[in-house]
Length: 251
Ligand code: ADP
Image 1: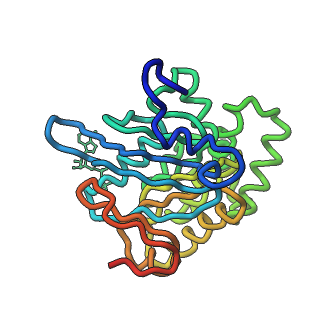
Image 2: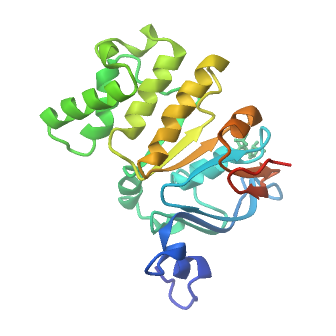
């Protein structure tokens, strides 16, 4: 999408390049800054690309800008400067109808699960398909299959608050993945869970990447990051301080 009278920034040209290379990018971020108040930056001059099907950790201390970056990718906010291209769409230029269309292609998992307490487990997961207008019979079948994948089919008629924290997060993951999103954003998904559940939940999230979903997990738990040995983006004071390839240790 060109702005009249302005040359397309290189990232846009690159994302549209046919036949591999940068054309495989699920996310391309080009010199992005986000400022909530004059003179202070939640993100500052961040550039990076994520390939389709890639699994990355986004790490850094509290206040580093991790959640801000995820909110920008979900088109919850717009960058103050720079360009963000998600699944070929430039976030800064999405119209009101394009935002929900893009979001349907992105699954989201939060630290505090954000389940609907008055709905059953099955209904919580079904919501993600109902908004797409999926026929009721298909919704039931897909929700059941998804709940089976996360090991919760026997809990489908229960309400979220009757489940353990780990089970609630598995419901949230089922909801995020049931419509086979192209991107999964997880913001501190294990932050409210006991350490013994952390690996179980992370394994579920990581399994989405093996099926072709681009997965971004924000976490400040470095032990978790080390365990998986995946590409790791480290933010510090809003800047991208490190982009470590898979298998490399963070400094
Ligand atoms: P992290 O997720 O790494 O903890 P955040 O993205 O939440 O970091 O925050 C980065 C910085 O931006 C912090 O200094 C935070 O106070 C600030 N910030 C985040 N969201 C807002 C907001 N809506 N309004 C004002 N400042 C914000």
